[in-house]
Length: 296
Image (tube, rainbow, N blue to C red; front, side, top):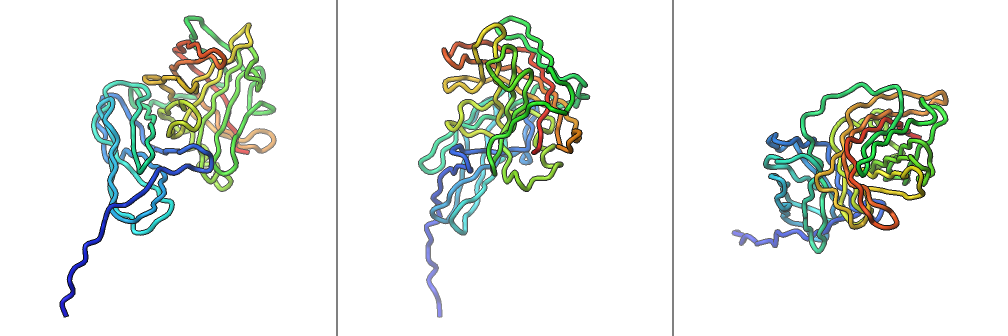
C-alpha cells in the first residue's frame, strides 16, 4: 500500500534562556585576533528553551568585520545548548558587540578582540595594580604578598563568579582595586585543572551591566579613587566599553599553607571607568594587575 508523504512544519520555536542567575550567559573558548581570519573552530555557545521542535537557524549582525551563525534541528523540547561559529576577519582590537534574536528575546553579545596572538608571560612575585586613570598614574602594591591570609571572593553556588583584590576588600578604600570574573557552571564539581583553565591566557569582554546583556567570561573592574570616597567601575548601566580590552597574559597555580588551591593571574587592560554615584567617566589606560583567585 502506498502511503502519501506528510509535510511537517519544520520551524522550531525557542527563546534565549537564563542560567541560575537572572542573567543570560554565553560561553566561548575561542580567541579572536585583529587581522586574523576566523575559522569554524571559533565558536560561541549559549542556552535556549525550545517550546516546539524543528529546524533552527540563527545569525548575528556583522560588526568589526565578522559575525556568528549556526543551524540545526531540534528533535525534542526543553533546555538546549546551541553553537554559532565565527566567520570573517576582525578589523580592530577591543571589545565588540553583536545583536542576536531568538523568539521574542533580543540581546547583545560582547566579544573580545586582541591585538596579537597571546605570548604567555611569567607572573611576577609581587601582587600589584598600576594604570593611568584620567591622565593620573596609579600604582598600588598588595599589603599582603603571597597566597596566605589574603582577601578573595566568590559569588553564587552552582553558577559562580570570582573576585580578587588589591589593598582591601572595602571597595571605597583609596587605591583599592577589584577584578571580578564570571561565570563557571556546575562549580561544586569542577576540578582544579578546570578552575585553572577558566583563567587561561586570552582576551575577555567586560560585563556592561549585570543582567541586561548576554555576557561570557565577563570582567568587571572596581576602583576606589585615592584620597576620596568615590568608587568607579566598568559595569555602569549606560557604560560603553566598545574598544576596551582585558587580556590574561600569565597564570600560575598552587596551594597555600592551608591547602587552598589558587591561580595567580597577570592581566593587562584598557577600559572606561564610571563613577558609581554620578556616572562621570574616566579613561583607564596601560592597566596591569597581578592578583590571586581561589577555589574554595
